[in-house]
Image 1 (cartoon, rainbow over the protein chains, first blue to last red):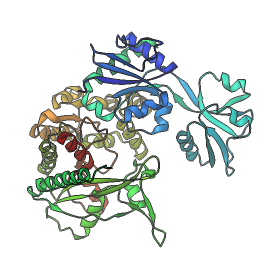
Image 2 (image 1 turned 180 degrees about the horizontal axis):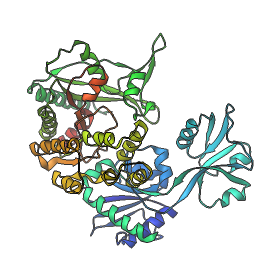
Image 3 (image 1 turned 120 degrees about the vertical axis):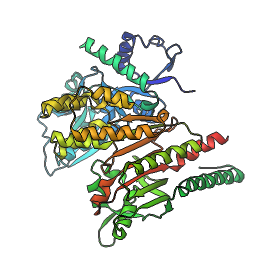
Image 4 (image 1 turned 60 degrees about the horizontal axis):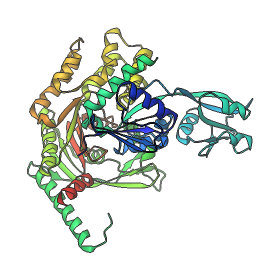
Length: 212
Length: 315
């Protein structure tokens, strides 16, 4: 029943670039841009595409509802999921950084640093390594607001252009990680659909070289 | 499981009972005897032995004298600890168990897992490895379940790490990269590390040594392998020839989260379940670390997964 390769793509900019890349290798012809449909089926090549919320891609892949998916490294690190990280796709590059008001000190030693973030796992790991005690304030969006209204001392988030930061009088205080888009696979699917997955992986790898 | 009707619930328990009996009968026929493992483990020694395991995932308890204990996250460790003080050199022991393990999931609540497993102690020859794999295969076949077995010889990677001269930190980093099959990170790792020239490409291509034994040999053909590395391949070849090849995929980069495996290891997958239903292998390193050199092979099977498949086929 389940010979279709199911691919979870994130809605939004990352997914749009991913679809472009898929089209370049001749795969995503069945996807109609700007449609409201969430599932596209390519019966000829036996592929099913699902468009899901970026933060849910990992969940779909880890549970095997999708065999493979495309997602930013930030989501992988945050979820600590048991998946395979097969390929760096070479797009969606940005930094994961600590930001705050100009001059804010981030090495406070004994004093607790208050950090607002959408990424508590990554943040905790990073500051644990430095032995800096922190208090995490979990937010779901507009983290830039937190230091302005006194909810936190700093924030940690992905930074693409830094425009949102500077518009709000904040700046990057330190870069923590390099982020880019990854092709991930479910561990069981990797075995059962190895040939299909490996073929796609190689095609995308070749296509990535072309795009550099 | 929740049931609306008592009859449904009883039917479920009847099937479960029959499945457990069938599992037991299968291994008793091969000379295995039942053992009941202990509930508690010492936290410090467990973590020390399994460096890459997530500490948050264990269920901790506090003793009256301040010792930290954990509820057994796996059964093998607890059986071996129990056996070691009474072990007589030269003896052979075949054991099986049907009990529960405990872990903490990401939401922080405690999860119970029913596990069935066998351990073959005191036999260092490959015959033991083969017997254990064959029993795993025959269990799944007897329930009519389709599966793929991923088989590895850990000796290959461990020897490679030794010959490259990686320290503990480097080796943990490499194992983590391989555990996630992260090709790009592996590439970076090779470029960043000081690896002797003949080994650079061998390590860089680590994720490609998989498929059939022919395929692996083909991908390794350009390299001048040491005696020990060749031995590891030969062992894997021996196993692959003796088992049903339709179900086997060999993979020299299929490593376990547990560091105590040293030799043939395997994980068996079925399509509808996103974690391995059976995992096992040779773990002589564990017995050594626990205080006595006892050759040991075994596997654990997640019996809830098998039951799910049995129920599906029944309906």
